[in-house]
Length: 193
Image (cartoon, rainbow, N blue to C red; front, side, top):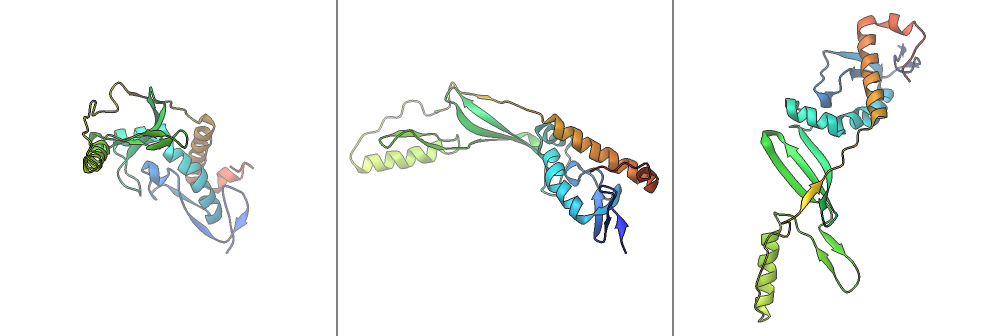
């Protein structure tokens, strides 16, 4: 049996249920339409994934506790640890937990030297190994500032891809109208793609 995909207006033989509101945003099959499996996969991996991974949606999911297939909601952002200009990631998790991660913990400036940049959870372990190694060589080690991040702060630049948000909202609106009006909606001669 060949049906028409509402997204393309073309016939297809392999169909699947499309969540009108993406599963990553808390949507379920209660509101779904039958669409071409190929088109659903393409839109899911491009548009739905981009929407679910946008900073705005991640923040709203965390605020309202909306789970997805991958589990508890979280809000992840890229940041720059200033004043050293080091790339980092900050992740807010449900329950008020915060995780900070230095993305490039080791930076080498040239063949003769470089800088080792450690996250807060790595400092004590690194210092213990370093001190132990130096003491085995008969050297005395005095540690001054044990917090290499003192005086540092995060700079976070949040950008919103308005084109992607418009396309995603159009897709949701199209799916909702098709769910409500059915094929009458398609008979107007408009298709989404």
